[in-house]
Image 1 (cartoon, rainbow, N blue to C red):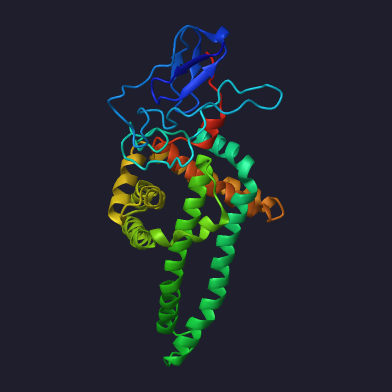
Image 2 (spheres, rainbow, N blue to C red; image 1 turned 90 degrees about the vertical axis):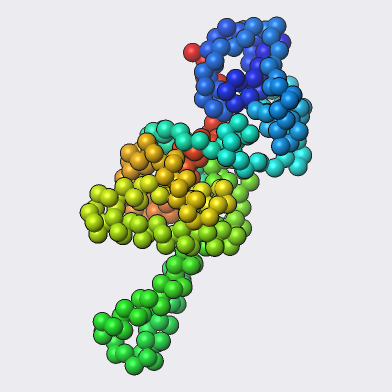
Amino acid sequence: MPIEFRCHQCGKLLRVADETAGRQAKCPACGVVQQIPAASATPASPSPESPSPFGAPVGNPFGTAPLPPPKPGGEQNPYQSPAAPIGYEPHYSFSADADPVRAFRATPIDAGDIISRAWIIFKIHWGMCTLAFFLMWIIQVVAGIVLGPLALITVAGMGFKQGEPEGAIIQQFLVQIVALPLAAWLDAGLTLFMLKTARGEAATIADVFSGGRYFLAMLPARFLFYLAYGIGVMACIVPGVLLALMFSQYSYIIVDREVGPIESLRLSNQITSGNKGAVFLLYLSTIGIGLLGIIALCVGVFFAQGFLTLMFAVAYLAMSGQRTLDQVLAPPVYR
């Protein structure tokens, strides 16, 4: 008879073979290593006095739902989690104890580990990730092709001749008035798509175009981010890089937590504290991965960029202490 027990860290229900009693196992959800109890032990239940937002004990977001049905042929994954009840909605909470899936706590990350974890997920969803990035890119390219001539015509109508510095500045300003809001809208949508994919949730192409709900926070946050970065670069290149790393997670936080621009920058500073080196290495890795995409007949650039956008979503979830799809798929590791 399989042994059932709950992870003492996140509350996930684990099922293992009875011959593994007494061995060490790594929880696939939170990574904590613990000893497998004896076969006679029953799963520990959290205190009924602390109900979760779903009416189930804290630490088990699936409540008392039954285990998934066995696979055809009688096989059943001994590490499978209980099926989520119908109508289950993830709970967005800043409390690490309220929901282990959506917990928010600063967590150290390793750049190499993030790349490996992102690759596991990308191999499953490479087509959708590549298509999502391609659609965002093509929209921005078409917008640039249209906006450039329109701005040039507008500047000429104002009496400026082609090549005049003042006219060129006004032309660039007119382009950016439209380009920056468009980029903020697309960035929010792509961020939503990649966060869903990284978590293992159902992501669709429609998500790429659903960034409007985050626009009012994303646009000023984007402006503040580049303002801080620009001031840092003018002062000295190093402060600019540090500020960019410090506030690099603002877009993910806005989409994930639905907070305002200032709060997104504050929380980004919180979770990147101690992780700036790892984030910097991830940005450096984009050079090598991008070159590999160019070498692959240039078409590989879209695959490379699809992977990179997913990689940074995985990095955000990892450094904010949230679970990703690769951890759900991985069984406990015995030691």
